[in-house]
Structures are given as structure tokens and as C-alpha cells.
Amino acid sequence: MAATAAPLTPERILEATEEVLRRHGAAKATVVDVARALGVSHGTVYRHFRTKAELRGAVTRRWLDRTSQTLSAIVTGTEPPETKLRDWLAGLFDAKQHKAGDDPELFATYSVLVDENSDVVDAHIADLTSQLTSIIHEGVEAGDFTSPDPALSARAVFDATSRFHDPCYASHWSRPGIEDAFTAVLDLTLRGLRTD
Image (cartoon, rainbow, N blue to C red; front, side, top):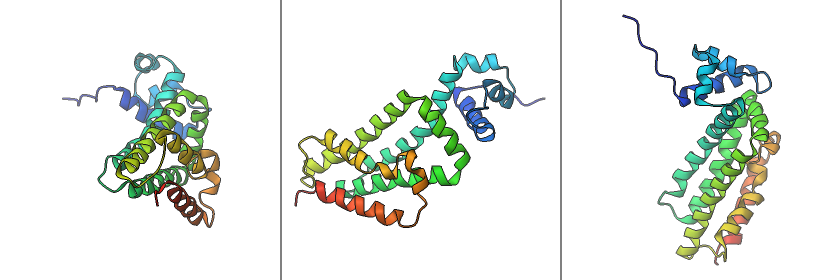
């Protein structure tokens, strides 16, 4: 008796799309390529994702959400707010470094997709700054941080550290001294938030 193929789910389609993007790049990857990789017709893929743009947006969101999900575990942890903030910013930098360094072809592909999907990127940044806001608010409540507006402070911290997470700086992330530069910015940021 032949084995039954696993059902076609949006997650399987996104996994196949990521593989196709890795192999062909954003400019050449098509829905037909994704369907071929799954052994289905392109019409079947379109039943889950109505357009190529919707599919590309979903795969971009999935890629960005991996970072958000990892960082959210830091936000909900039991460490003191200063440790959380330090770990969160270091985690963001580490995640971006790995994405750029471990799979540069896929990183380049996603850089193209991110430019195409500004609404997905805006939602990702809103999620990240919301996580930062939670940490800073917790620090204010604990008396460790001072901030009249934790959301505004979170956005300032995010912007101040952009060299270490914005993909436009990816070529800097492997340069000598980048870790020291990150630590200096992180220390300065924490000093600015402390109450003492």
C-alpha cells in the first residue's frame, strides 16, 4: 500500500517557498517552481495564497517572526529588566548576524523581499518595539529605569542600535571591532535608562 502524502498546508508551502528562494533567488523564483517542489499544480498553491505577492509576504513574515519569537522568550523571562534589555538587544544582533552570515544567499533574497513588503516590515518593527517597551516599562515599575514614556524610549533604543540589526548594515556585522562597538552602544543605552 502506498504511503499517503502529507496534506498540503500553508506551512509546507512556505517551507518549499523558502527552499525555492534559496535555490533561485527572489528575482527568478516563481509560484510554478514552488508548486513543482511540492509536486502539485500552481493552482493548488494559489488556493492557499491568492497571489504571488501574498506568498512572498507570508514567507517574509515567517522569516522575520523567527527573530520576534526568540526575543519574546526574553521579554517573558524572570531576569531583572536590565539583564532582559541587555539580552534582548544582544539576541537581536546575534539573530541578524547569523541570518546574514550563515546563509548569505537567502539573506540577500530576503533583503529584496523585505523591500517589497513594507507592511510586513512595519508590523515586525512594531512587534520588536512593543517587546522593548514591555522591558523598559517593567524597568520603570521596578525602579531600575527612568522614562516618562517607555514606548518613546523603546523606539529611541531601537533606532540608536540600528547599526546592529538593520539589514542595510549587514556588511558591517563581520568587521573587526563590531562586538566592542555593540557593547559600547549597549552600555551607553543602559546608562541613559538607569535611575542612578
